[in-house]
Amino acid sequence: MRTVIQRVQQAAVNADGQPAGAIGRGLMILLGIEEADTDADIEWLCQKIVNLRIFNDDEGVMNRSVLDIRGEILLVSQFTLFASTKKGNRPSYIRAARPDFAIPMYEQTIRQLTSLLGRPIATGVFGADMQVSLVNDGPVTILIDTKDRE
Image (cartoon, rainbow, N blue to C red; front, side, top):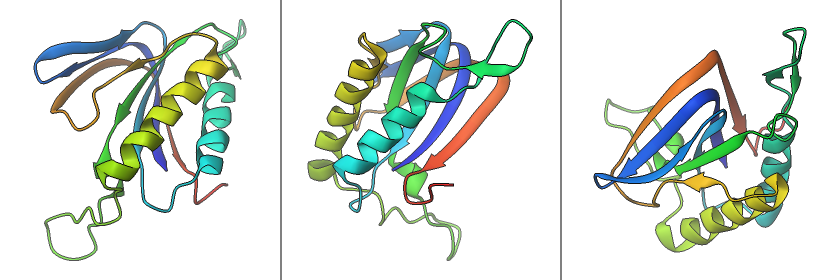
């Protein structure tokens, strides 16, 4: 699984021209899923996301998590995170999981983040044409790949 995590003041997603999800202060997460992903990847990634200390404390030091600040999460599926650009100028998405595998993994990620956060998260619509808007706070942007656990 690959994610792009952005600390935001607010974020929203429209799917096929209709509002799908919106949050205030919290994390906007783009999620890519590949066939090699497992339940263990979901558990590890979700724990990492809710415990990342990337929100400022009273001294302005990034020392608080989304849990600590009672922030929100917006999760949007994005298969293009597995684009390969090694050959030519047209990206290949061969590593991105097919919907029959990716949808259950995406739904399980939603359930896991909801459980860890203690309340529902906002989401996009899997496979839809989506428009995402956000106000990046910082900016703070973190990349995580569950196959490269630094």
